[in-house]
Image (cartoon, rainbow, N blue to C red; front, top):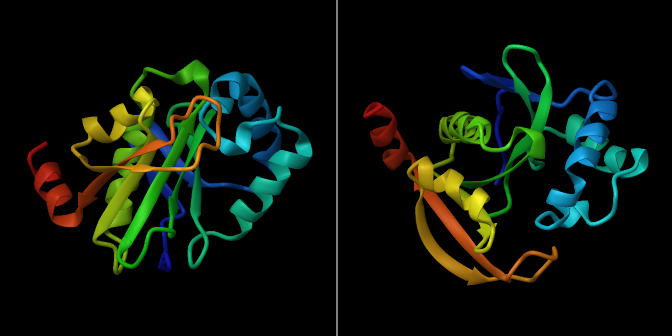
Length: 192
């Protein structure tokens, strides 16, 4: 699946999703990941070692350069009022034709404020307006209750639970696959 022409910026009420800017975002990305490292390392395979300039650059440089097409469309989650970087999210073309997977994480200091829910609502709408995309999925470990709350709040349905290789210490190896189809999303959004 190719991501054709993903938006460079998506503006919400409290958050703005924007394409990463290289090299400007590097230092703040390192700072935020370092502040959240203990929390992130429980769930994220990429956070198993403390972040370094080199490890952040290894993700960040290609994420900023390769945006859409055959690559993911990775976004910085920033606060609309200040532009402060508070996390990341992305559209990933790795689950087959007509579908994109959304991934996300947030600075532990900003958890519980609804910022991820707003960001993923914006990203779901953007994904389902892209040519050829009719389904969006969110995958998270069964034990990651905070992460699972996001698709549940947004009206995704739990489609199935699958065995998955454990790649981080807090994972159970049981992934929840949350799904929403374009027609379900349109119906739900029209009711808001």
